[in-house]
Image (cartoon, rainbow, N blue to C red; front, top):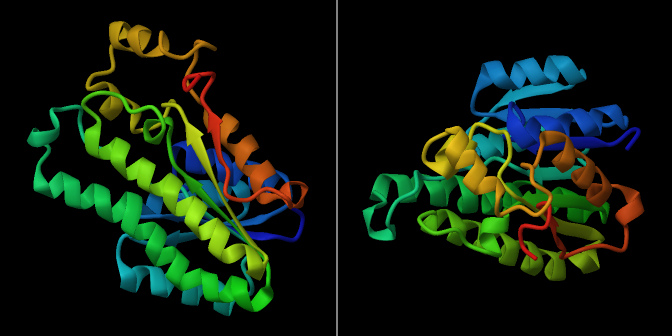
Length: 243
């Protein structure tokens, strides 16, 4: 990845931070994008990257992000990693406010970043887009209903983006991690207790959560030239969860 430039949304923590670290280790300059300015700055300082505060669910913010990044140079890689969930509950009990937030961050943001950056990739006839989806979009867990649906949407969006953008030299792939040691873990489980962790881990054949390093390694491969023949794939990084 030497000489490449990447954007990682939600890069201030969790999987996004792991992806930013790996990209930087392999020589890329990383724009660490997060709604949390302090978190973005901390990771950007660590990886010698650029911190950008942005609400990726807001069209004006994403347009400003594109202007900031593209006026300073070109972009090679876009990672749509930022995501949210709702607390485990019956599907009819999820509030409209929580649903709207989920839709905006997990789905609308992918549209907004595509609108902002795909024209640039088309001009260059090159580019790699990576969407961080979830095993929840493949094998839904009970009581995470609308989160599951949003990640299923992201997997389908990845495939339709891939088939449409392939003639322009743009590759689009996704990662499907199982839950990991990220700020969302407690939300997935409802409560973070040894008993809940044991119950959750029992569903993962390899017996552990995904780590930021796991996601960084997989993301690095899919976004690198070594994966130049791979597009439209939703790679499971899940310790066998979806078998």
